[in-house]
Each structure stands twice: as C-alpha cells, then as structure tokens.
Image 1 (cartoon, rainbow, N blue to C red):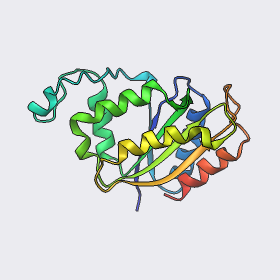
Image 2 (image 1 turned 180 degrees about the vertical axis):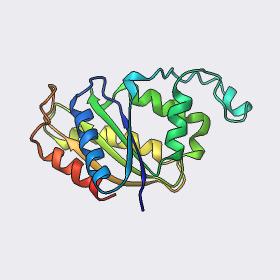
Image 3 (image 1 turned 30 degrees about the vertical axis):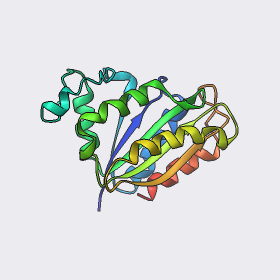
Length: 179
C-alpha cells in the first residue's frame, strides 16, 4: 500500500546537508512506490506562535494568515512525516522549532503517523545530537498514535556537500525504501 510521505526540510540552505539527506530519503520512498513531497521551510512564511490562544477559542483556527495552514493540513493528511534539521548550538534550528510551535492550534489532529528524524551537524559524534532528538521526541510525545520509526545522523557535516559519500546517504535512502 502506497504511503503519503511529507518531508519537512528545516535547512536554511537549499542543497545543505540535511536537505540532501531528505532527498535521499524521498528517493528511496518513491522507488518503493510511495508518494513523497518535500516542504522547504525556508520558502514558507511561518510566523512565530503568539501564544494568544485565539485558536483554542476559535475552533482550532489560528488567527495568523501565513503558510502554516497549508503545511499543517499536509502534516495531518500524511501517513509518514520526516522532520529534518541541522543542529545549531546543540539544538534544532529556528525554522523547525517555529514550525513545531505553530502546530499548537491543531496538534491533536497530527495522529497515527510514522515519524522519522534527520539531523546533521559539524560535530562527528552522535551524542552531540541527542538533545535535538529529545526535543523532537518532546514534540511527538503529545501526539496520539505517532511512532518514531528511525533516525538518520549526518555527523561531521559542516559545509555544503560534506554529507556526500557518507554512510548517512545510504542510510537515508534505505530507510526511505523500507516505509
């Protein structure tokens, strides 16, 4: 059965290391017969959550008029969500955190999904990326029926292209293939 895969690329650099791993995951997923779409967060207007709670008084509709409505609709419709971020100062980048915060209005609808995480960092040690993984897990903890299915660690990748030829490239492709 074909799955609907949504890849959320938090990289601020098109063709950056985490973005390239997203492409590899998608390639594997598509070759296995799944539908895959990538949203490059940098290209979307996603404002910060204002913590106004208007959404909770307004049928879970956020008062802000930006691209988050479209992104959230796609997150809710997907069977599989891949969340990818470079690791900056031992944490996810601002684009990804802003996206997570903005799911507040409808987070209860993001249910029964398989979730994969892709993280990249200049540091060669996976342990230095665990804080970011725990932040992702903090987000999915509140989502009903969501299962963490895999993590791809792109270590030692600072400059664009550093991830090429790494074991993470094959890992991302293979993980996408096994959806």
